[in-house]
Length: 161
Image 1 (cartoon, one colour):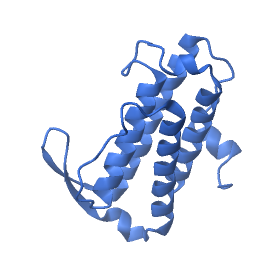
Image 2: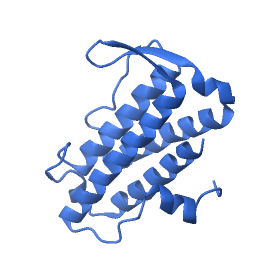
Image 3: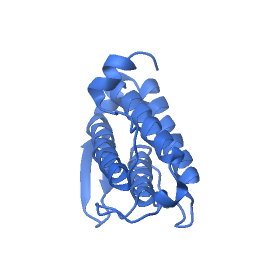
Image 4: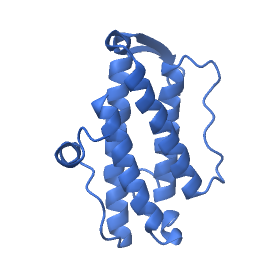
């Protein structure tokens, strides 16, 4: 559960700073895995939601946010998804994290993974892309970028959520 609290906190921190930037920067092209802050956030929301649907055994195929969704709405969707993960982690019995999920990836390949490992992946995936967001923001000239390292959260915020 601690990692889910961290993930939600770190996404709130980075998203809050992104929303303070000049809105023209949200979609300005920067060399990275995804071409803009907006597209990186969209990917993060899509990934968190896709994994959520797998863990919830939802039969509906994943529907990504509309490509016209603006950045503030995308941030709202991402943080709402993070809240769902946080509630789930708080409400899940310890042995529930060992439950094995069967799913197919985007290429149709079948896999089985424990909820524990899926949750770790979701958090690690978010950390990876938050790092990209930081680099993109620096490239654009942003200052006062929040520190979102896990150890920083433990030192400053751990246990407060």
